[in-house]
Image (tube, rainbow, N blue to C red; front, side):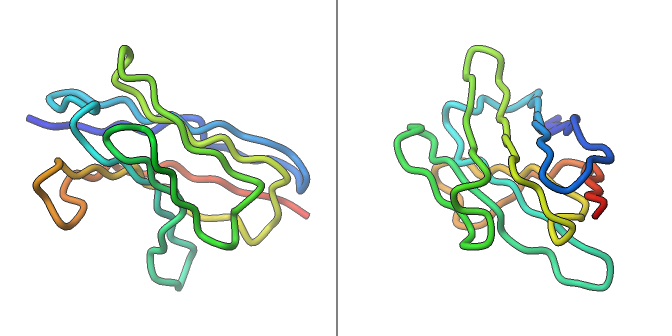
Length: 119
């Protein structure tokens, strides 16, 4: 059974930083593209960042470019999202997601971790 478990969320002041972690079990991350998504209250879930299975290609939403950084540690089967210069608009539940090489859509999802940025 595949499980993705996020951690690292919390309350932070604007301008602060947080690092989210996503630990996978039942899934080898080195064969998956991993992504981070977020959903703010009353809004649709949106893409934040992704890292391909090779780790070579990184993708970011325009709203987080230059502030957020996605990385992975295959030895720990963990994906990270480093978030800097946080603004209140970053407040949301952040979800880790994964898809195997042969999948078109993200198939595996974590339960989410809350990030709240106060002004």
